[in-house]
Image (cartoon, rainbow, N blue to C red; front, top):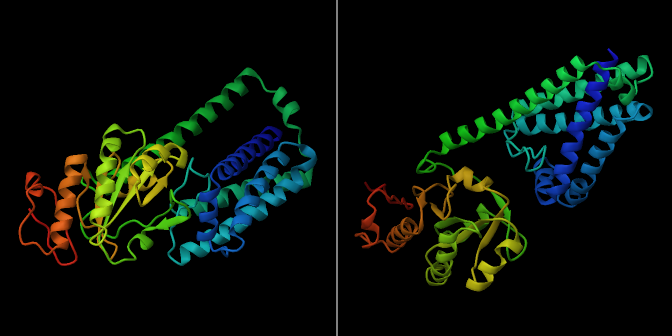
Amino acid sequence: MLLIIVLVRIALSVVFSLAGVTKLMDQPGTREAVKNFGAPNAIAPAVAFVLPFIELAIAVGLLFSETTVVSSIAGILLLGLFVIAISVNLARGRTHDCHCFGQLYSRPLGWPTLLRNIIFMLGAGFVLWQAALAASPKIVSTLATLSAAGWTAIAMAVAGMLAVFLYLQQRHRKALAAAVGPEGLPIDSIAPDFELPAYHGGKKSLAQLLDHGKPLLLLFTNPHCGPCVVLFKEIKEWQDAHQDKLTIALISRGTIKENFVNVARNGLGEVLLQKEREIGEKYGGLATPTGVVVSPDGRIASRVAAGADEIRNLLSNVLGNANGSSHHHPAATENPEQEFVGETAQPTH
């Protein structure tokens, strides 16, 4: 029994440590998650800053016998708060990303999220119950009594958990790819919402980009992508020449520093920053450069256009639709499979 108590404490300590560290490493995402869970905007930054330190304090406290009781009580209270917040959001039909482990593991809210937190809370309750019955065992001295077979069993259990985690990650990616499809999201489906840091300051959401009542051309790029770098000058020209007909926004990967040269050299306008490919995955923009059109009412209005030539064709189709043209632009006819659906237009085949 002593070994079981020790292993549960170590497992909970690892969970709280990962949660705290990953939240600290992604404070913007943590602030957004806190607001999504219902915290007022005025206190969300403070909550997002304090929460990771509380989780880290619980993680450290669980490692020492003298602080096990206090840490397990704190863990139960914190996890109970999470369970309530998740339950309320699910009851309201809200399934925003939980951001439970920052960018390491963030999934939309669901019953698995709720069940996971309940299991962690039960684990903390088990530790508290055992600590109330007898002094909590010391981790080092307990582990020192393990035989080679015991250490082997622990190592196999850890390897098994890692394998399950990697499998779930891979399955999630495959499920997402299957839902999006090679041509992107279905025409006329609701465009996935997002709010990202803007290169020029603040944040921009999909709703804000659609505020002007014009089609939105989203371009997924990467500062280290050669074809993207070649296309940036053209994108700037498009942004200037066609701003009265459509909004053109780049969703680039990486930090402001990584994107500085390309944005400054070309004077690019609307540039938003995703950390990896989290928004691109939702739209099917996994390769770069890739483009997709969102209609003014927030629906997918085109197939995914991959590569500079397809993006140019897509732009031509968007402009032709915006002009009310009854014929295709020459560039658009080069790719007959490319589709664009405006507010009143029907798919072309």
